[in-house]
Length: 188
Image (cartoon, rainbow, N blue to C red; front, side, top):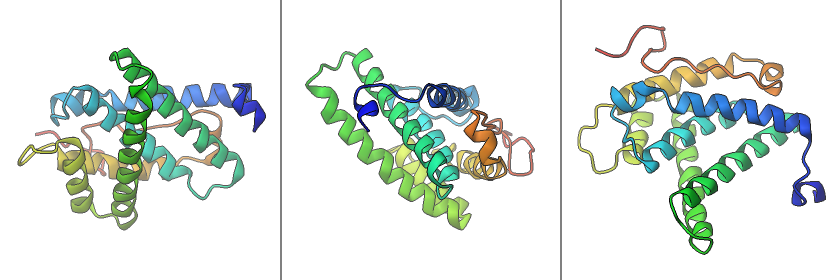
């Protein structure tokens, strides 16, 4: 615990977290998400996609036991450190950052609960509704909800097929956005 407080973490875990987080960020930045599925290309829209992909990995790691639970916690810490850095880059000062981080953390955990329930049931319409509420609030008939839900279901399935050892060594595989569960293009 004191090593964590002093900033001295396991170097091997840091390399794994860096590798996993880099793959999560790459998946969250897939152009299809923003161009074809109309996820808002704004700081909040990018947060939503990053949060979705972090959630998908955490959802995969749940129940895996101590080593992967620690990895999941470190991945969560890395995500919020990145959010902190992004807020500061947007010009938010030291006094405003903790308040915004607290709000974004509540948003993340609320989304994780809604997305997790829908994924666990394999309920694409419920997942699409949750994504629409969060990713494009106030946009009536947002056409990105259904393809994004299909993508998230496929990513969840693909991540479930990856071994704990693969993930613990820093390797993740997300499907290409724009493909369905069957691997076909979901873009007209």
